Image (cartoon, rainbow, N blue to C red; front, side, top):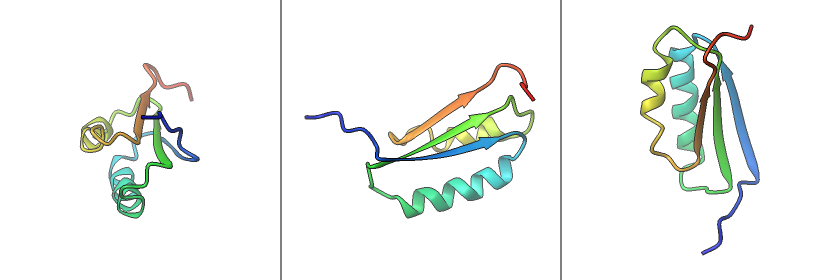
Length: 74
């Protein structure tokens, strides 16, 4: 089977926006359900809120990527 690359990347930068991020991701994953041509990428600038806990809910989705900075880069 061929490893197909997504044709659309939805990139979401965040810093301490956990509650809004959860709403956004819920709506996105509802909209793209089963569409393997789309990937969702969250870039976290070292949030100190509940962002990492919220992310755990989505990590099992194969079209989801999460990157977190070790320090806040401003």
